[in-house]
Amino acid sequence: MREEEGRKMWGRVLVHDRMTTPHTPPRRMWDLYANRVVLYWVAHEGRCAISHAWVDEKDRGDVMTPTNGKGWPVPVLKDADLDLIRTEMLNHEAQYAWLDVLCLRQQGGNGEHLRLEE
Image (cartoon, rainbow, N blue to C red; front, side, top):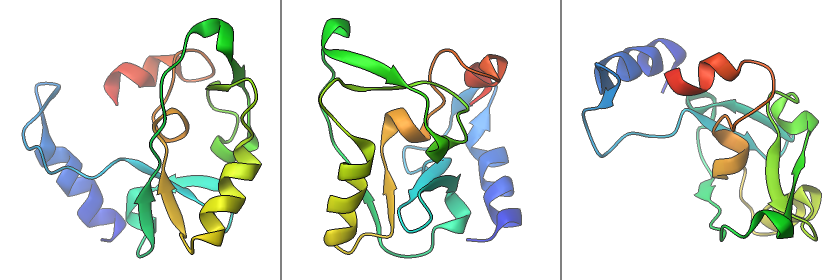
């Protein structure tokens, strides 16, 4: 998918701030090779999703990471390490991963006004 196609797709998917199709790819992916968040249409092959469990606030902390350009705090388990997760995914030959707390704009940080739009 190219950037122009991606923008057209998102224009069709969101109507009056509602998703119109259940088969919509995510907006962003974690580029494991470059260790940064990229727009979906940049990710060509080797995509996977990372599943995790939500935990009580006392068991997690917010991390500002260069992986997402320090655009928003990423809530992670206190004993978790994004670098170790990345290494494990690379060992499984993944190139791009979707991790919701990293790829979806979270509460707080710069651009809070954009979170509701996305």
